[in-house]
Image (tube, rainbow, N blue to C red):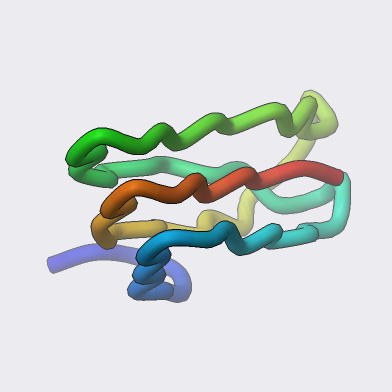
Length: 66
């Protein structure tokens, strides 16, 4: 059982950008098929909130940042 919120992202022949606050830690499980996924977040040291991002990047990209 996962604690926190979850988000399922899908990008095909394009991209999506996910913007999260600095007080949220992000865990990713994205399958890149001829695409890519990047987690560019820098959470604060005292964060207790977690966002679980799952999904697929098909000929596209998924970018997660603050």
